[in-house]
Length: 383
Image 1 (cartoon, rainbow, N blue to C red):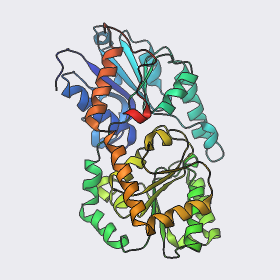
Image 2 (image 1 turned 180 degrees about the vertical axis):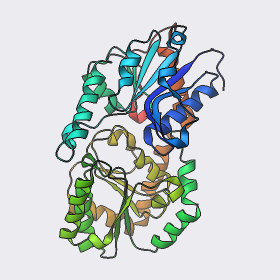
Image 3 (image 1 turned 120 degrees about the vertical axis):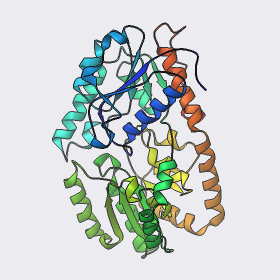
Image 4 (image 1 turned 180 degrees about the horizontal axis):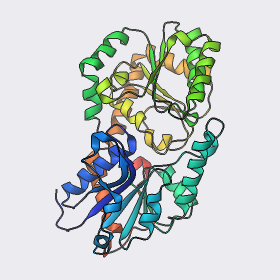
C-alpha cells in the first residue's frame, strides 16, 4: 500500500554483494519496501559485485545537498569503513541499521587482521551513538545501548524464502537431494566456517551420535572459510582424530544456482552451536523446510527461535546426540516441534516487518511528529 507522504530513503552500504549475502539481501528487501510505500529509494556503495553493477551507484556521487531537503540516509553498518566519515557530516537525517559485528576475541587466535578490523569497526560504531539506530534483534539492540546509543528500535530481518526454495527444486538441487536423501540421518549446519560458530562443538556432538547411535549418519557444513582456512584445517584434523572424517562433508559456500536450498531439504536435523549471532537467519531457513532445529542459546539465537525448535544452554554433547536420536524416532514429538516452528515463522511475516520498517524510518525522519522513544521497541517474541 503506497503512502501519501512523499519521502526519499536512500540506503548506503560499504560493499554491495550479489543476492545470497545476508546484509545485501536486506538492502534489496528494504528498497522494495520503501518503493512499495511510494518513497524514492536508491542504493549507494563504495563497491559491489559485478552481477549487481546496475543496482547501485557510487557513494561519492551522491548529492548531499539533497539530504538537506529532507532525505533519509539509511546506513547499513556491517564493518568499519570510510563511508562512516562521509555520512557523519551529512546535513540530512542519518539512520543506522546495525547488522552486528562479531567480538574480535572470537577470531583473534586464527586471524589477527580480521580481529583488528572487527575491533576497529566496533570502536568506529561508538562514534555514531548520536545517530538513531535500528537493530535486528533485542540482543543487537542491547549491544548498541551498551555502546551509548540512546535511540534504538528493533526491526528484524525481512524474510523471503522463495529463492531459497526455488534453488532446492533446480536440477542441481534435486540431484543433491536424490544423492543424500536416502534414509540416512543427515545433520546440517549452515553458516561461515568461523570460530564464533563453534564448528568444533558440532563435530563433537556429531561424533557422539555417529559412534554411539548411528554409524551411517552424515554431517554437512555449508559455508565458506574465507579468512579462516587455518581454523577449518584444525577442524578437519579434529574430524580425523574423532574418526568421523569420512562422514563429514565440507560443502563450502553454495550459491542459489548451485542448489543451496537442497541442503535444507535433505537435512534430517539442523544443529547450531554458534556463540555469537546478531539474528541468525539459517535457523528460520531450516524451519521453512520443516527441519527440526536444535541450537545453543547464545546471542540472538533464543529471541530468533522464540518457542520454535529446541534450545539448550549447556553443551552436553551426549545429550545433544540423544535429542537428535529422539527426534528421529519419535514421530509425534517431531510433528509437535515442526508445528511450533511453523507458528514461529508466522511471527516473521514479511509484510508486517516491512510495515514496521517503514513506520520506524518515518518516526526518525526529519519533520516527523515525534521520534521513537526507547520503550517503543518490538519485543523479540512479539514480531
